[in-house]
Image 1 (cartoon, helix red, strand yellow):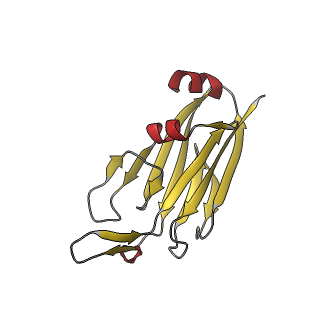
Image 2: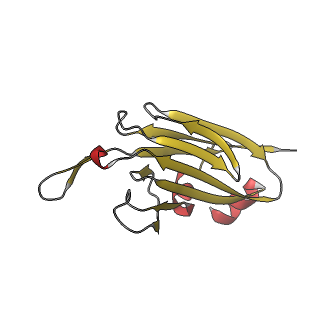
Length: 144
């Protein structure tokens, strides 16, 4: 059976923030990092069969003190995780990934949960979900 490789980088904007991240594909946890202090490179091969898939990045560990706000209510610094360099079989799919992801979060408990767009930076505890199907090249042709 043919395989297809998905890879991306996870980078902290503030290495002192104890962001915990998990990467799931369907029902399998593929990565768990307790504290993302440096760039984490994720890479996984999956069967290029006829299936529907869900890639999830689950972020935890962000606390209110990781966001600095001035007297006027403006954010002056914030800890976040950047998800970038997204490739599928060495094809840059950053824009497609951002277009198709849903970022579910509740502003770290300060508001109701929302299903938001994802712009490559995750600053709230929550889940980033990317749904796709295999064979992957057929899915890419339909969505690019």
